[in-house]
Structure formats: structure tokens, C-alpha cells
Image (cartoon, rainbow, N blue to C red):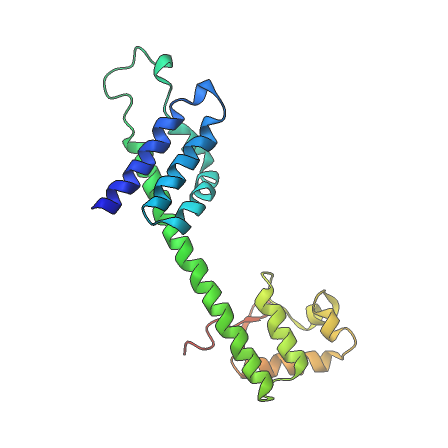
Length: 198
């Protein structure tokens, strides 16, 4: 319960510092800093670092939920200064940040494991130096599937296959696909990131 209370306190601190906003533009970063410090003190170090990214992704909603400075709403009815929607928004952000941290950590571990697996395949000569380099490039790539033409003509793959024949590129793709290291998709091949899961 203490952890939950700390998270709510962080969101409330964010809200109340924002309520001073019309006095200075510096209150927005100050509100974020107050929330970050309280979340980190409660043990949410990594998610706290991602919260500004959440607010940026949902900037319109974030700004709609900002409180109005008390001096600018003297005629408001009771309950108009309810921070509950803002706190709920912050808690949604914390849940997103926790999932995002988990995903990023899992991807980092997966990358290290795959790099090690590719190195073992190279050391045991199950893949050639060029095939190993291709796997490493695909591990770094975030682009579309690669095919014969992209291997031979597009950077960075053309560094490996620019002087090789299309038959060599086709043979490498077939070999790596047969080993389960690549998966076929529309337009070419992508890295099979789950090759060690089955």
C-alpha cells in the first residue's frame, strides 16, 4: 500500500505544481521533475525516466487535464479542482512505462542471446563469415524484409553482396532460412527473433 500511495503522491505533486503554471513556463518541467523524484524515491527508477515520453505521446490529453490556477477560477463550483482524472492519467502512464521497461529489457536480453548464438554458429562453422555478418546486420535493422535485390543493391547489405552473384545471395538466404534463422515474409526475409524459443 505504501508503494501505491507514493505513486499517487507523485501524480498529485505533478498536478499541484502544474496549478502554478500561469506564473511561469518553468512550472511544467518543475512538475515533471517533482513527479520523477517521488517515483524514483518509491523505487520506480526506470519507469520514471519514461514518463515524459508518455506525456509527449499524449500531449493533447495531458494539456487538457492540466489544472487551472486558483486565481483564474474564483467562481468555480465545489469539486471543480478535482485532480482525479489527472492522477488516473498519470497512473495509466506509469503502467505504460512499466510495460515499456519490461519490453525493452526483454529485447535487450534477446539481442544478447541471439548475438551469442550467431557467434557460436560461426565458431562451429555452421555459417560462413558473410552469413554471420548478414545476421548481425539484420539484428540491427528495423527496415522492411530483405530480398535478393536489396542484398545486392542496398546499403549496408551491398557491402556484403555487391560483388557477389545473385545466386550467392539466394543460397545464403535459403541456408539461413533452412536453419530457422530467417523467416519468410511478403517481400523477402526477416530475422527470426524467436529461433531459440521453439
